[in-house]
Length: 387
Ligand SMILES: [Fe+2]
Image (cartoon, rainbow, N blue to C red; front, side, top):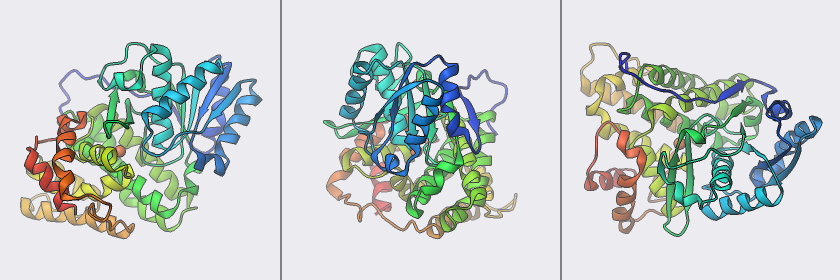
């Protein structure tokens, strides 16, 4: 358990959780005196109809809106700048994001570009945003990224081929409307990748060297919920109990990692996603057990509790070798059960990429809170082990 005697600060947005939350967008916009909202979403979601329902909810309350759907996975710097142009050209005064991590991160970035009149890449790093963006309402459609509750925003710097992290309390949305009904349209693979992304958030927050009693509580409960619900959400996509369990798990993991930050899995995954444009959840899922193996000896007792939250049934007096094996086995069994069997070489990573991948991973803000600091060759070794 993290220290309870130190002075700590925590951030979280106002959030509504449960069926029907998404359709409160209009009411919340009216409460915030919003006149015209930029609705940020992706083309895939537009086809599923949710942005349309949100637009209707806004117009029922007399709030005008215009839709920006030019967001791809791993949102790019130029997409943010285009969205900002549209926001200003259309005279918007707020942003409503509907979608997974990509539209929500793009929406956060559009907001600060508009209020600070700066290029998005100038905000890279921790606490580099002077003025908060306009009011932002986030409606997540995946149970994984938790960008709707976090102070993180990840943008692809296309020229440098890296994903930059913008970390600032100004990135915490004003309102998160978290509605599990939006997640039933995710296919089996997206459910698995985003679910293991949520697991990675919980694991990395729990073993982070910035963890605390408050974040530990959310992280462990998240892992227990994922153990209970992820497989069923993959096998039975319309099962609302499983979908709700996963949405709650994602929210808890988001509250944990937004305040305890992350670790080597995310640092290495951001590096991979920037260079090879690979899906975030897939990169994390492939790397997770390899990083846990590397980190184990830094915080073995924390991994004993994590292993048990994943159903490993480790005895309190079991020797550490047994704890390591059982914890790794629990993670690998879950990955196998939800059909995640890829490796990084199959996805196009080659030995030539390793030095640059390691260099970018070591420079990522998430690496600072990993429970131990790896060397260049150790990071390359973890990438190779995931091949
Ligand atoms: Fe993530």
